[in-house]
Image (cartoon, rainbow, N blue to C red; front, side, top):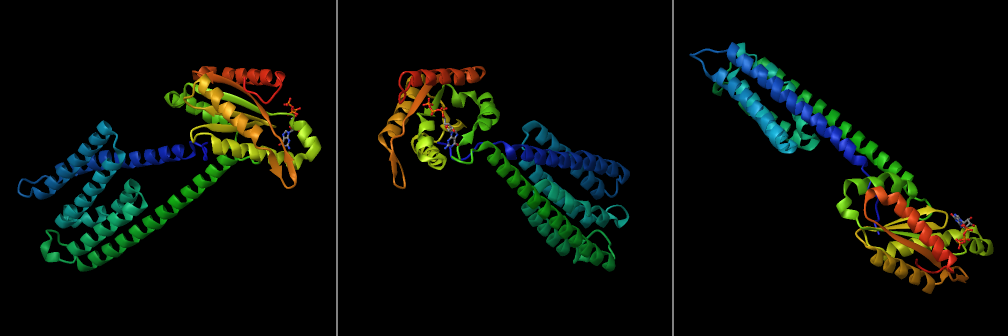
Length: 350
Ligand SMILES: Nc1nc2c(ncn2[C@@H]2O[C@H](COP(=O)(O)OP(=O)(O)OP(=O)(O)O)[C@@H](O)[C@H]2O)c(=O)[nH]1
């Protein structure tokens, strides 16, 4: 029987995070691409083609990458390609010096862009690589086309380092707080969907989450065996042994479901001493034989608790559901079958 609830808690958060990355990818590609092409025109000089080439080339590659993303929807690869483009562009621009040697100023937004595109760990690594390459490049002024002042270079490197560290701290704790919030939400959802006594799912889970699963993935579920199970004469048991011992019976019954149903089957505490078993891809005949197996296990294994040893039996109503729109009707039909099993003398499957 399924041991953990299938809840869509994290899915929504992941979707929002993907949207954030798509915004950054689009912003960098379209805006930075357009700015680079514009600067390419502005710095056009037939005798000095390197800077316009860097700018036109960079701009076109950014446009090509966003086109690649639009066509393939491969967000991870598009972000990784974008990060490589960003790094190459920064290095090329700093090597050249840009217009009037102003290239160093343009490097400052890129650590934040890398964090936005790649997530904390990969961004930290790529920023560290970028930083090392910048240091190697800038500490060999003779190898550069640009002409930076010594004081300018040292202040640039220190400020870049500060920007990277601040971005890293910011993103690291943003990610940690998201993880904590999503864990909290998950545990709240689990609590709301679980019966605290038996730790089986409750009716709320069936009506909200499971019904949605049926809608989303009908091929995984239908035909769906629907079994309603109710402990016989439970009131008498409670009256004779006390409510606490009755609780132990409910827990024992839940353990029987956990040990004897398949991982994909779902056992729900429907309320009181009534349970609903949902058996994916199981026809009526198979569902009846599952119910019969559980009935026999319960009937042949007396309930033991301390010095108490008492027989426990249950009655079962079985039906099968073929499509989502009949789900509630199938539960009702299983309930009517259960009523017949009770009326026919209990401890039986109908
Ligand atoms: N111990 C315990 N008892 C519960 C719990 N929830 C419901 N019950 C009891 O379950 C009993 C159900 O009684 P009835 O609905 O009359 O059914 P029954 O005695 O099992 O009789 P049949 O279903 O006709 O066989 C009631 O006495 C409820 O108090 C619970 O969480 N713990």
